[in-house]
Length: 114
Image (tube, rainbow, N blue to C red):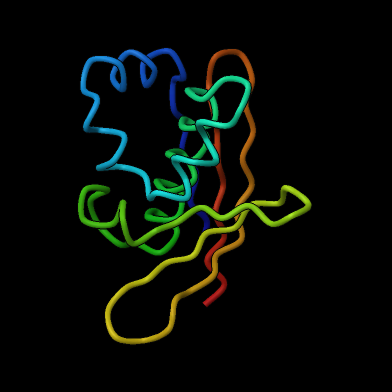
């Protein structure tokens, strides 16, 4: 199953500024560290959020609020991202993803292979 999501970068930037606790609610500690170190943290947060939503759609999981802390977007040393999904009692599931930014939006695609 394929999942796709798009996030408006400026809209997310405004939301994160107006609701500071939202960052900790939507992103894991490691994601926050990574995104804050980027040239434009809001762009990085938008790509990460789009990736989480794409994973949710690909795996047919449910609402973001229930999964935001159980899905972590991990960047490999080469910069290649993938999603690690913890859900329930078994081992985490790894989901290949792709993230891109252009024209004020971030887009992500996730591919559930199982």
